[in-house]
Image 1: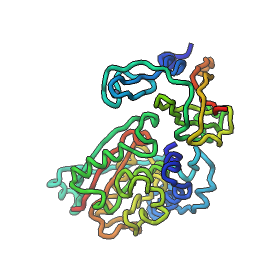
Image 2: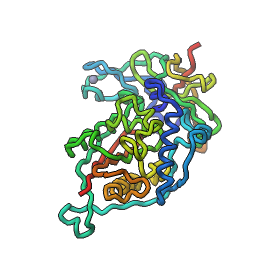
Image 3: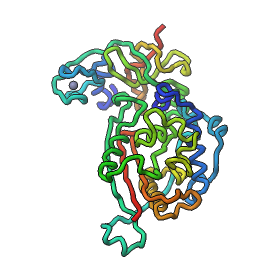
Image 4: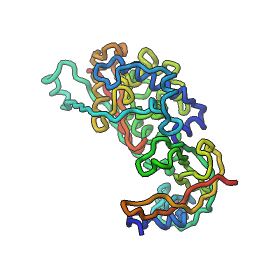
Amino acid sequence: MIARAHMQQYGTTEEDMAWVSVKNHRHGAKNDKAQFRREVTVEEVMSSSVVAEPLRLLHCSPVSDGAAAVLLCPLDHAKKYTDRPVKIVGSGLATDSLALAHRQDPAFLDAVQKSAERAYEMARLGPQDIQLAEVHDCFSIAEVCCIEALGFVEKGKGGPAAREGLTAVGGRIPVNTSGGLKSKGHPVGATGIAQAIEIFHQLRGEGGECQVENARIGLAQNMGGSGASSVVHIFQGV
Amino acid sequence: MPSPRYWREIPSRYRLEAGRCKGCGVVVFPARHICPSCRGEDVEKVRLSRKGKVITSTVIHVPPGEFLMEAPYAIALVQTPEGARLMTQVVDCDPSSVLPGMEVNLEFRLIRKEGQGGILCYGHKAVPTP
Ligand SMILES: [Zn+2]
C-alpha cells in the first residue's frame, strides 16, 4: 500500500522498484556472507510471482537464519582490541503509528526522518556528509522511502535513484553495499548489527569488491513495523 | 460470541464509532480518549458515514493462512467524508479494479471465523459505489 501510494503521488514505477533489487543483488553477489550471492535482472524481478500488488517475490527480502555481533567499548579502551576502531558519532530513534491509517502520509516514513534528524544533530553532520549507507530494504519500496527520509534525495525522488545508479557503488551515495536485506538476507534480530558491521568494514577499507573509495563516514538505518520505529546510527573511521 | 479481544471492538467494528477532538477537530478511528494530534482530552463520539474513497490499496496474492481461500483479494486504506481513515477489504468486484480514488460504500459483513469452532466475527467491508 505504501508502494502504490508512492506510485500514485510521485509517478514511481514497478521498474524503478525492480532496480532496487537488481542493484542490491549486484552488491550482494560480491559479498561472501550474503544468502543470495547471485545477480538478478529487471526482467526476472518483473516476472516473478506477485505477493501483494504491486510487489513481487523479488521485491521482497527473505526471512533468514543468521547472527551478528559487535564489540562496543569507550574509545580510549578500543586500542586494546584493534588498531583501527570505528566511532559511533550519532544515534537517533523515533516512532510513528503502526497503523498506516494513522500516519500523516502513507507514502512517507516520518519515523525514519525523525530518527535521522536526531542522529545528524548529535553527529553535527548532514545527509550531504554521508558517503555510504545501509538501509532497511525489507521490500524494494522501503529503500525508496528510506533514502528520501534520510535526506539523500528529495521527497518523492527516491524512485529513479537505483535505476540511475545514484545508490550503486560508484554513485553519489552507495546504499546497501552488503547486498542489503534483499540479497545479503534478513535474519530479523541480527539485521541491524549486520548493517553496522558492513559500515565498520567499509570505514576500515575492508569492503572488498564493493569498497566505497575513501569512505570515512557511513550511516546505518534499521526499522520495524513498516516504519513504526526507526533507528539511525552514524559511524566515523578513526 | 467471539473472544473478548474481538467483542471489545464492537463499537468500532459494528457501529463505525470514531472520536472527534473538540479542540482541533481531528477525527480518529477507532475512538480514543486522548487526541493523538493535540493531546486534548475532550473527544466526542461520532458515527462515520458508511462511505469513503480509496487512498491506497493492494491485492493480496499470498495471504495469511485463514484467508487462503479468498486470495486474490483487495485491501484498501479508505477515507470517510469525516476525515477518518480505516483499513478494509474491498469485495464484490474485480480486485484489480480497486485503485486510489475509487468511491466505496462500507457494508456490514462477515470478516472471519474464529478458532476451531468457527465462531463468526462481523465488521465492515468496502464495496464499490454503484
Ligand atoms: Zn485534537
